Every structure is written in structure tokens, then in C-alpha cells.
Length: 214
Image 1 (cartoon, one colour):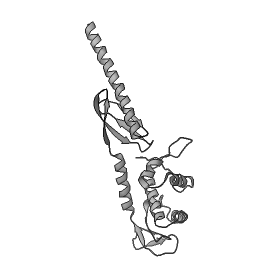
Image 2 (image 1 turned 135 degrees about the horizontal axis):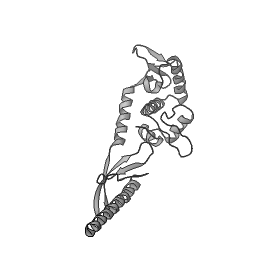
Image 3 (image 1 turned 90 degrees about the horizontal axis):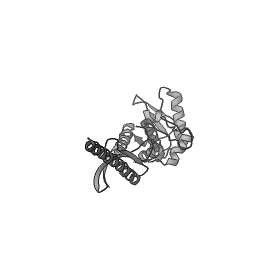
Image 4 (image 1 turned 90 degrees about the vertical axis):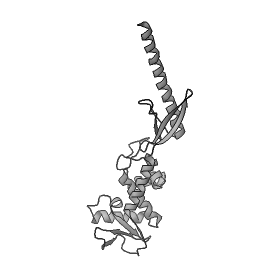
């Protein structure tokens, strides 16, 4: 899955303004698709989500963005094999220093050269939390709409790329629509169902006309 800025905000708890600022300052940029002009949509990957969440966790525990950037610069210089440190390494922090646990658990790199370890968070736990939120977004939501006095079951899906929702009525093949809100999506699928019913009615009348003519 790919994620637009709004979905990233929902999953990570970061504001849209913060996400935009981190992109503009080249801290965490969208790795799937960058904005290419007015109205274009940025798309982030799951790896980007991990970077966002790790950065937010560090900030929530007192580490400034400046210090995080300094630590990442150090890691990229001294561990060039690690492409995205925020998504690949385990961190510890005391609020002023960021420590990185290397493959040798006994060896700890102090990326800012001072501090006492009082807080630790596991990358695995962050990944599982993010996966849970992504799965929650993917869950189908069932609704019932009424068109011309008859009820139809429809399924709503969140669009994590373009934003808003897409919705389908499985009773009719290809009966799909979309909307920026749940309410709009439900209204749009009603129009789609009406269109399918009109086509079915026309085909039925055409069939009857042919039968009578024969």
C-alpha cells in the first residue's frame, strides 16, 4: 500500500503541517511519489511510516528535530550500508542523546556523544503498531442504501492514496463509485445503482420488444 499525507497523519499522529515541513526540509520525503505541481498527491511507503513514527517517538521523549537530523547525518556517514537509519536501526534516548543499538547488542553508538540511557523503544513494536493501524484502515465497512424502494448492501473502502473513499455494490458487476466523505460516497453509490437499474430496465424492455416482434 501507498499512503497520502492525510493517511500518514491518521496513522502516525503527526499533523499535516509537520509532515509537509519535514518534506520541505528534506528530513523525510515521500519515497513513492513526490508532489509534481499544484493539486498533485504525495505518496509515502510503509518504510516512510516507520521513519515518521520513530521520529515522532524521539520528539515526544524530548529529542529536538535538530538533534535527530544530526544523529541521522552521523549514521549515514559512518554506516553507509544503512540506507534509512530511522527505519532500520534500534534507538535509545534520554531526551538529549540518541543511542543506536548495533548488530552487536553489547556495542552502543552514542550519536551525540553524551547522556544517560533512561528510555528505550523497540522498532519491532513500532512496526506492529503501524501494521495494526494500516489493517484497521483496510477493513471493509458495510452499509445499506435504499434505491427506488429496495435496499442494497454496499461496501465502503478508505482510499489511502488519493484520499476519501471508494464504494461498491456487489449485486451489480462494476457498480463502483467514490466520494470525499462517507456521506458523499453513499450518495454517489446510490446514483451508480440507479444507473445500473436503468440499464437493466432498458435491456428488459428491449428483450420483451424483440420477443413480441418474433
